[in-house]
Amino acid sequence: MLRLFLALMATVVLGLASRLHPVGWHLWDRIVGEVLYAVAAYLVLAMLFFRRPPLFIAGLAFGACLAVEVFKLTGIPAQYQHVWFVRWFLGMVFGWVNLVYYFIGALLAAFADGKILRPQSIHRPMPGTAG
Image 1 (tube, rainbow, N blue to C red):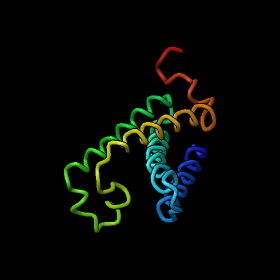
Image 2: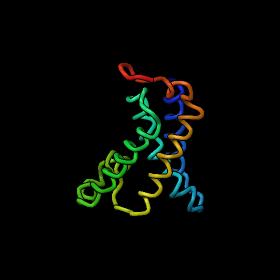
Image 3: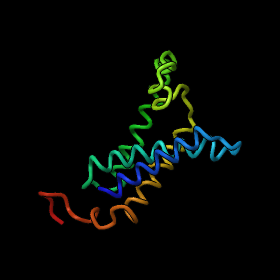
């Protein structure tokens, strides 16, 4: 659990750095932040669903990111762009390409989770199941 939390903190710091300190490189200025948004969602969900397999959590993370992105189509976030939480957490404008970045981020997080963060814990069966 500590590894997940530390990974989340590092993800948030990198994501904020990519937004607050643009360097004129599209990969850093735009794409990294979108990928890390999904990674952060994954890590929060991994802490909540600690015993679930990484691909399950990746699906939840992508679904959450998809829901936030589709919510932008309502126009509600744009109406409340003056609220910092809405501007930073939800964003303002729907973008199809963001869904690709979220998918990549969720899969990368699942891979890192299974290989680095919790390699032993994902192989334990859930209570009440055979395995």
